[in-house]
Image 1 (tube, rainbow, N blue to C red):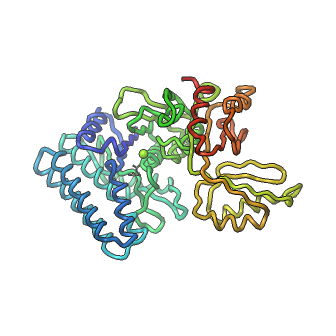
Image 2: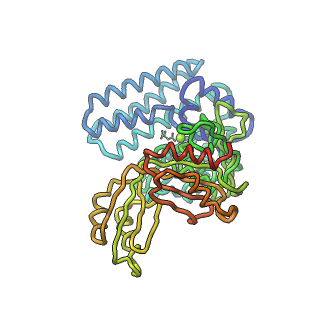
Length: 438
Ligand code: ASP
Ligand code: MG
């Protein structure tokens, strides 16, 4: 069985929902993961923000506006009166929940319950559409099998056990529909896999079911070798390895939720990125294999802060880096890049919520310097070992760009450079012109 995920744009209108139905109904059994209709999760986040700020009136107005939009969708989506009624019932229940969650004191748990309604509505309506058109379809409630643990990490074991049970309970079908993004946490509350998490849902389910393939359907034709928003003449990549994809997805290629490849890699399940607007295009195939040598792609991640700690105490000492890293661990702040000299270490973070506390602790160890508004440029491919003189090629290509840090040799798949964000476009263009095949 294949697992297919369709994003918000793919189910973002009545027309697009019908297109997805036509696309998936080829008589082959499959499981389909859907996002909320495009704009819905953002709207629900906005409503929650107003509720956090105790601005109930505006929140109420926004809820009303969203509900009208959904009523409109229902009236255009179905032909039969009975289906329309069914559709309105789905909407009604979700908006009752939203109003209920919004009514009292408002906390994170209420917000999570509100955010879940987007996927509950899209999948509820889509299932009815499939049924109206005579397809043997069953809705699998993701809240009955998708789990995260106390650390907010997906619990693949629990998901595997639970989904089997739920599939047995709902009975056989040609098409299974389920919600992306939403799950339950260790306290059994409604929670989610973070924004964009529907991709991750699809790959977790794919791994749990040992699917034949996981397909992520969006509105672009796959991974490109450079960021089309900043560089012209980018090229689609036909094939990537899991490792290359993980680097690209984490370092800024917005097309895929960064954790998506992990479950697929674990069970060696191919992932294919496909374009809803151009279904015959094979898209990008992601497998355990690395094809070709040299540079394949580049991605950029903004919002990076570089921190340098300089200390003479580091000279010929041991345990110094450990003490530095422990500070970041204590404040649960991940480090992305590191470079060291004998008396200094530079590292980067993207989550600055604990920066003040971290800096206070770091100052105990030496002189601390902070550079904000930096961008990690991540160059991916089968790089090290294949090509000699590769580093010099990269340095030559980036002539004139003030590189703040460089990381080479950490893995054979990637070289990362840190540049001021003001130089991002120039750097991407230079890489495109000098290092990529276009
Ligand atoms: N609806 C969620 C979001 O907008 C999850 C997803 O689309 O992947 O973030
Ligand atoms: Mg997405």
